[in-house]
Length: 241
Image 1 (tube, rainbow, N blue to C red):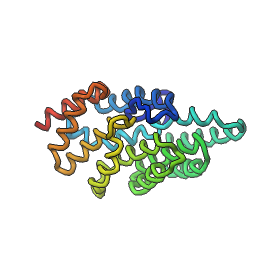
Image 2 (image 1 turned 30 degrees about the horizontal axis):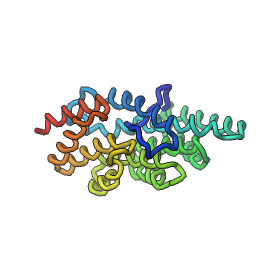
Image 3 (image 1 turned 180 degrees about the vertical axis):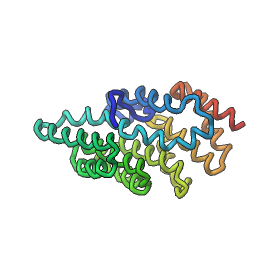
Image 4 (image 1 turned 90 degrees about the vertical axis):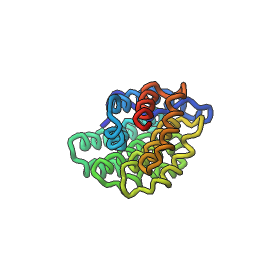
């Protein structure tokens, strides 16, 4: 599930999030490429029908940088090696299609502290979503979002990923999802662009076309919006007129 190209979801620079600056800086460029390559040239209906799946497809990639940052801070080399072997084995299970076994393997690793544990929690949630266990995936992301030990950056990321599922979940309470995303859309939040785009998708689902247009207009005019997201917002804004 992991590749050499590690990614997360459109983080922007923010003075409020200085705990792991190198991680945030690294993830911005890589996920812009990852998701934009998926969504570029898509028509409006196809974009939103696949939105959640696209986000979930990179759920494992989006937090890979945290492993590189935290794992090497451990002092017990043998323990790191053992965890690394277990993580690699879980990855192989996932890649071979043994989803249930991979979920269980990541579940065991999720109890570990540090980078491998956090990464395993995201991987587990992504696999649960992949196999159609929406409730399980949302529960896993919710647990990360509520865990102060994960760090604000990754708590917010979990909220983004959960919203990526709920945007296509018929049973989701759209208003509650929008309320959870609202703080992440504020200026200065590293995930604001993804949060804003998801909020626009939720507005469309709720029939709030005017609200969606307003968000897309703002994204299309903001010089800090990633270039391809700005282009996508402009295209969708044209469709909605």
